[in-house]
Image 1 (cartoon, rainbow, N blue to C red):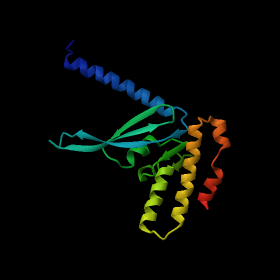
Image 2 (cartoon, rainbow, N blue to C red):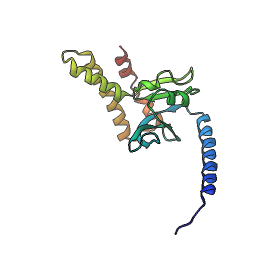
Image 3 (cartoon, one colour):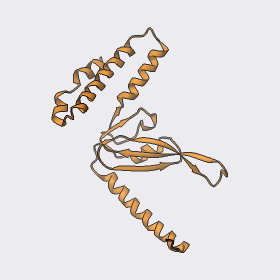
Image 4 (cartoon, helix red, strand yellow):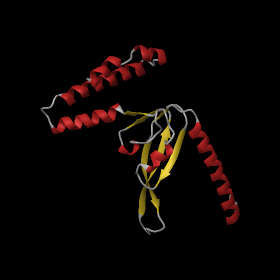
Length: 176
């Protein structure tokens, strides 16, 4: 089935849809979201000034566990995108350590690193300096954290049960 819509009508429909999407995005941003786990994905886009060549842009995803996801598009991977999106955010921001999230967010925002990314950095440090033992010890403690999480997932623990198996002692050992 084909239908034809004249160009001015199509343009008008797209403009109305865009305005509704902007309102929806603002409403999602204003929700009392307490935790974001952002991520950025490279995407190729065609640019009018680079005929025949695509430009690498980024699609930023800001999601909360089990909840809404908002996407933001930026032509670059710089700090401007996260800084603008997170300017008033005052919850927990858990990231993979990308420096672009530094200095983003409101004054009460807590920036938490991803244990897998921390572990990878320490493992790589150990690969460079094989005789060094501090990184190895922390990698082993992070492995203990992962084992606690795996144990909880395998048993399908609820919130109360997960808190009862809290990895607090392991985290304190890492901090030392």
